[in-house]
Image (cartoon, rainbow, N blue to C red; front, side):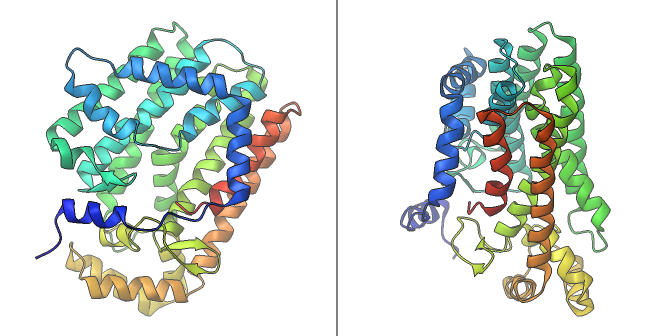
Length: 350
């Protein structure tokens, strides 16, 4: 009999903590130090947005939203606002909205993917059920739209509505393509653009509220960063801590593969290994759940291929272009910190 969720939770809690990267810790501390008060204010705003007299709603959302996430999106919003000289109070609301939208997508994703753990604890759907998880995700989305509309800034609401529509398209495309034996690179890139990069770019552009001259560079920064972030996540799916090989990441190696999702290391490995492609296609045709020995063998072969190194090189290329996009902004500590983030994202270990 497979272990229960309770047993797996206990086992996860016995794992040794990841060894921190001093360079990454210094960068994060520097970034947070530049906008510490703004981040604290955004956290308060987030809790206000999640408030409801239906008390189970903030309980379900808070189970995920306040479980120790990175708060990357609010941090990016506030740093970009600072780098662009945008000081209006609405930047705080937009920072909170970005995190609220992210929370909504995670609540929905875990139901779709039947996810059991996130951020080291059982997912809301496991604790509260699929119905409450989905409906709470809907509430988060509605509150994000309401908070933005209440600002009375048309551009913010327009850009957010466009972003939400694109995110939905990305989720549908990924779900529809799960198990597709002939998924190509163009479709993979489109999924990343819509599912991940579009929200990050909305955050870095501060909802289009910054000075017009800075909107395109900040949008480009966010899009390139989004690509780098997702490809780095693909690498984590193969248990990679760094360029040298597999290690503990807190993510079950090959989980995306088992769900029928193509990731960049897999796509690139199959480009140069027709036998691997044929075996992957056969495994996908067989349908979920993928046999454990088959998934393990495919992961091993991808790790032995050049797909991992090539995927990392693609991520690094996006990271470099992200940093370069910010050259259009005035020199400042905030810009310098932002330009260091893409390299950190590619090297992250969890």
